[in-house]
Length: 447
Image (cartoon, rainbow, N blue to C red):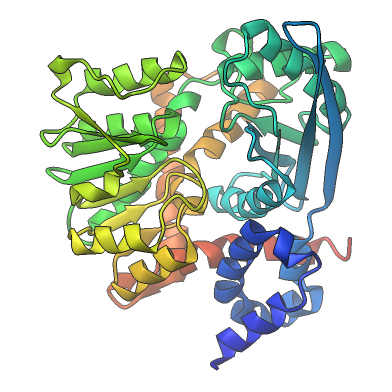
């Protein structure tokens, strides 16, 4: 066993939580530990401060009951959480997710990852994540509003512009952010930027909806340029049909790529000639209406294949943009056998361990989500700044700032991950994020 593996094994054997009930958190911690423990042990200050051990334990976990009334006047009860990971470099920042799968393990892993992602942006942002096991599927507008208001009654005491600034995530879009912000403002009795992803009419930022998907493509552009290639003419397969997936598709099309697939949980929408902007906008409209994508209009020359995945299309570039652990070892092998050159994560930890191992052994360019999908939180940081200054930027200015931030992230990650003419983006992202966090934690003493 080499030194890195020995350090990782020792660290994982002494984690401060029940590992059996936190599989996603263990996966995230192991990934980062493998990259950064040698860095920590080789720096006396970092080692003495036990930086990674402190980051594994969030600063605070807020857990609460959410009771609300449904359309039939019956009381419904859900669970809500806010996991505040680290405030070492700025106020807590991270999304809220409403989905039946939400539990403490998923939110702890997401908050842990968010700390490193936010550190990579160079902005003063800490890391957090929250949400509820509430399922909005089939619920009326009034029911969603009542749930958001009930959720915020419990969350409001723990957030604020300089304390913790939530944003949206799965099933928490502009509508839900509006209800949540209104409830927070009513309870706080002040107007402030306590959430991001707000509507433009009440303090939101241009480009926030597009930011994560665009950012994935901007970062991947730089990675491809390192290989003396580009998106132009490449076959791109994308999983998901939400904001990240569809806006990544739009930007890839703009750069000359042929986007051959989008998907949902029931199958893949495939177009060998490449989806058009109109086709992607149809997918967006279907998503907004809560409808499926299995009946594409004939004009789009696209076919929905039940049970298929985007990875069956032999893409040059794969962008998993749906959810965690969506792409397993067999799917990774399908990509490898199909000649995939590059995989960039639009979702948080979308690869299983087996998939990540397969890509690494095949020497496929693999860009982790904490680097590639940092565009969303970057523009959220810009929204916070705009709220503080009471001055707002137009879309072109925000897009220019986003491109600059993604360029800077690539530079930091490449510097840490470069080995000769190759760049290990996974290792580089983990180390670059860790160094910034570690320096701040050491500087502020034992807390």
